[in-house]
Length: 312
Image (cartoon, rainbow, N blue to C red; front, top):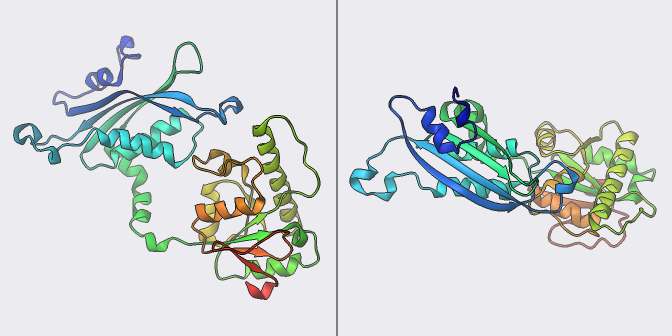
């Protein structure tokens, strides 16, 4: 952009300024405002703030104007649905990430050519804070083609075995035998553990207590990793997906995935086994197995209790 005055114009002005001598048609959604939990700062967790979207989409030409046929145009819903779908998928820290994901979703439509996405936070300062990106279909296709191939082959998805390993096993001489059985299972396994033994510190703030409880589980995850080098502590979806595909024996550290989930478990006093059930559902596990020794474990449709390594 040569004109500095265009830097703070809305995306439709920037789209016009950067168009060729033969400009494309454009559709837009302006001032689309949603209440979202977003942000990398601790003060932005557990609360929502207003986010404003302005999106301009350049589209391939069609005969809609001549025929008045709604089926020949790209609907404005393509933009709003892309925004809403991304907001429901996961909690995001950065506006830059959100803008990129929205652009990718919009450009997945074959009629989309180029998109301008501006996202602004309205409640952080007296003014607005925001980012704006411009993405084209060619660049989009170069980036996401591998993801498209995976989406067309759903039968390749691997459903892991989720194993809930209680403290009674973690701190016993039976641990090695259990890990041998888990590592040797035909399915890739992800281990969930209890919170560390002993009383946890408590505060008057529910969000702080939730963090403390999750960190207590992660302490035990590292204890397990320290006792057997086959166990690798993992906290992100990307690394867990990789581990599932490559047969790595993973131990789940829950803080990141739980706190970033849009529709995650919300209770501060959520039992570790309930957390494991939620996790198993999120990763489409083949089954959830609870090892012997967990106090209060009751079998239901989502789990089975195993009393010896041979039972796996």
